[in-house]
Figure 1 (cartoon, rainbow, N blue to C red):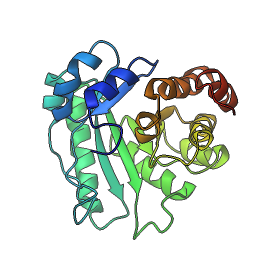
Figure 2 (cartoon, rainbow, N blue to C red):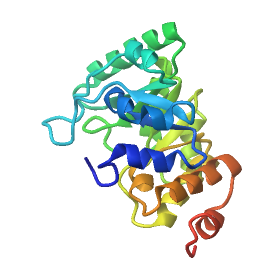
Figure 3 (cartoon, one colour):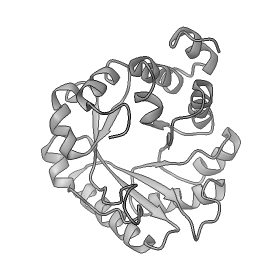
Amino acid sequence: PIPGIENLRVTVSKIVEADIDAVMVTPGMLRHVYEEVIGRVGVVARIDGTGTTKGPDHTDDRLISSVDTAVKMGADAVSIMVYIGCEREADQLEKMGLVADICESYGMPLLSEVIPSKPYLEDPYSPEAVAYCSRIGAEYGSDVIKTYYTGDPESFKYVTSRVPIPIVVLGGPKKETIKDFLSMVKGAVEGGGKGVAVGRNIFQYKDPTQMAQAVSEIVHKGRSVEEVMEEVLEVKA
């Protein structure tokens, strides 16, 4: 595992102390953190994951579990990865559509992590590419989209104004500075996003509870980056 989640139970127990909405885990790991999360925060079950970073093709992301299993385990939503613009695009879109249908029959929300990809989308982070892929996610029946931030609030509004469902921003690799990360969170919300779904930038921070709370204060209360840095994280802005 990557740094920060060697002992997932310990990490999750710290994060749920903050005013967060949900955690995302695989069904396999949900069994190990069940007591820490159920009844305290929402649970999003990640039901695909065959495309590892060490394998030959990370876009070859197939189902490893099911909506039925997620329901039985008490999850509040399910999540899948969807790569658009890659060689396996058709397989990815078929997966999203079929999972969305099953989710609809259960009344289970679907969060699709829609990733603009090369080679057919040359600039995956452009507003046009992110909007294109996010709109496809909505067209295929997703309830929430998780995707790239486009760099500033105005360009992100281009995305959110074209997609009729909530969009949350992924965190990606750990940012160089705290301010860089929190500015992304603030910009996403100012650009019409409904929040963020991030991992490393929270659980790799020296105090994951503090960082999760800082993010929550920006998303839920509209506080500034400078305020949460100084008052929540207790660092100089």
